[in-house]
Image (cartoon, rainbow, N blue to C red):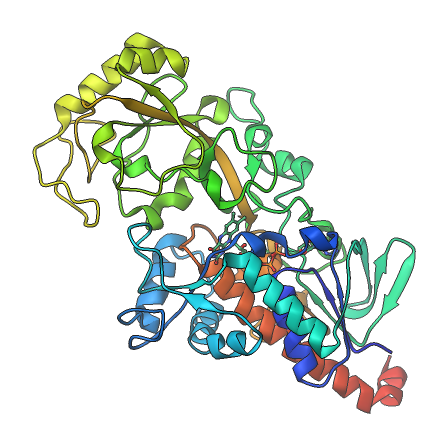
Length: 472
Ligand SMILES: Cc1cc2nc3c(=O)[nH]c(=O)nc-3n(C[C@H](O)[C@H](O)[C@H](O)COP(=O)(O)OP(=O)(O)OC[C@H]3O[C@@H](n4cnc5c(N)ncnc54)[C@H](O)[C@@H]3O)c2cc1C
C-alpha cells in the first residue's frame, strides 16, 4: 500500500511530499489543477518572512523571534495561537538551507518597493520558480504527481484516514496530508459567509480572487462535515484592494494598487473613509480589501497627484488621468461637487511637514475625520490619477484545527494519520490580519512538519499492520 498521499499541489503540499519522501515513505501527490496551472496560490508569491538574529545572505539586519511574534500579535489583534505561531516563526529560521537543497534560489529584495529586505527572503524568479524547483526535485526523487486529480472526498474511520476519492477512484494510503488551500475561489461559499449587508447587497459578489481558481474548499468542507474541529471565521481572509479591472481569478500580484498611502481614497459617494497614511504600506495593504468591502458597491478610488509618482511600484495598468480634479471626477463617474469638496477639505487640513515616503513622516492632517496621519500632502499638482479598487481575496482563514504535529483534530483528539498544512489550517495561526510573507512561513513550516509526521505514521503502520488491524 502507498505510504503517504498528499492532496494539493502548492507550497505546503510539495514541502510535505518532499519531507515524507526524505523520511523514507512512498508518496503520491494529487493536484486538482492541470500541469500548466499547478502550484495553487503559491505560484503567485514572491517571498517568505524569516526570523534571523543577524544578517544572512539575502536578509539584512536582524529579525528576532520576539519582533516577528509581536508583528503577528499586532496584526491579528490577539486572535492567534502563540505556541503554533512561535513554531512557525522558529521554523522560518532554518528552512532556507532545506529549500536550497531542493533547488530554490533567493534574491535580494527589490529596492524602493515594500521595505522588506530585513524581514523577507525573496524567491529568485518568484513563486513560479519556487514551485517549479520543488516539482523538479519531486520528479527527480521519484515522487509521483497526478494532475487533474481533484479529490472530492476523504474516507475516514473516526478520525483515522482510510482513502482519498478522486471521482469514483479510491486511493488508499497509510497516511494523508491535506494541503488543498482555502475556499476563496468558491464564490457561493464566499457569498454565504459574507451574507447580505444593510443596503441589501451581497458584498462577496464584487470580490475578485487573486490566485488560483482551484481552491474551492471541497476538502475543507468535507472534513468539517465529517467532524474535524474547525478554526477561524469564514469572513476572515487576506484581502487586498486591487485594480477593479483585474480578472475574476488569477490576476496575481500585478493587480495590486500600491499608491494608497500617498493620496486619498474615496468611495462611490466621493467621500474618504479611512486613514490612508496609518502605517507603512506593507503593514497596511492587507486591511484595505476589507475596508473597500465595507463601502457601498464594494468599490474605492485611490487618487494621487503627480508629486508622488516614483514613490511606489507603479500599477501595471494605467489609471484614469486628468489635468483637473473636476475632469478626474467625471472620468471616474463620481459626483463632481462632492469629490471637489472632499479634496478641498483634505487639502485645507494638511499641515506642513517634511515628506519622506520611506519614514513615518510628519505630514499629517489636522481637524479632519478620518485623519491622515502620515504622507498627507495637498493634491495640487496635475496631472491627477485615479485607480478604481475592488476587494481582492488572497486566501481564507477558516480551517481545520491542528496541533504542533499538524495532526487534524476531531472533537479535541488528534488524528493518528491525517495531517493538514498551508491555507487549510492557516487560521490556527492567523485569526485575522496579515503581515507580508507569513503565508509561506506557515505553509513551509507546517508542510514540512505534516510530511514528516505523515511519513512517521505510515512507517509505524508498516511495522505493525497486524496489530493495527486487530485494534481496529
Ligand atoms: C497574488 C498572491 C500573492 C501572494 N504573495 C505571497 C507572498 O509573497 N508571500 C507569502 O507568504 N504569501 C503570499 N501569498 C499567499 C500564499 O500564496 C499562500 O499563503 C500559500 O501559497 C498557501 O500555500 P498552500 O500550499 O496552502 O496553498 P496553494 O498554493 O493555494 O495550493 C493549494 C493546492 O491545492 C490544490 N487543490 C485544491 N483543492 C483540491 C482538491 N480537492 N484536490 C486536489 N487538489 C486540490 C490546488 O490546485 C492547489 O494546487 C500570495 C497569494 C496570492 C494569491
